[in-house]
Length: 117
Image 1 (cartoon, rainbow, N blue to C red):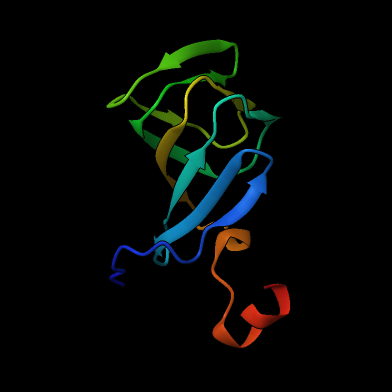
Image 2 (tube, rainbow, N blue to C red):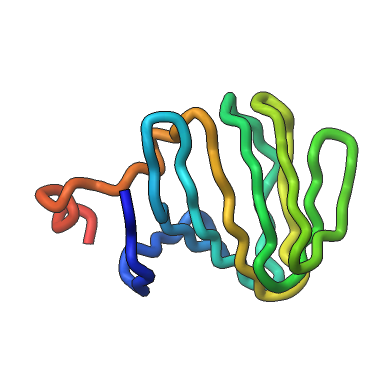
């Protein structure tokens, strides 16, 4: 799968956080997150391993009992089942890869897109 850069396809995840699935395969899925200053990603857990890279901005990332102030160029890996969340300190962009594929993040087929637009 190959995908060209496009402004199309961003969806609201929660207040202040937008996401777009970039590419996916049989075992992994890559997502871009646009994170707006002041947004809070509440603590949560899921069975997927999650590796990320902060492209720009600053976030305060909680993973288990650890809290990290994340700056551009920093990366992380959160094991499946570990509670994690984030506070968005500055407008930020993060790229994350999930394994296995998060089916709820798969783009809708063209035939169903008009149902949610």
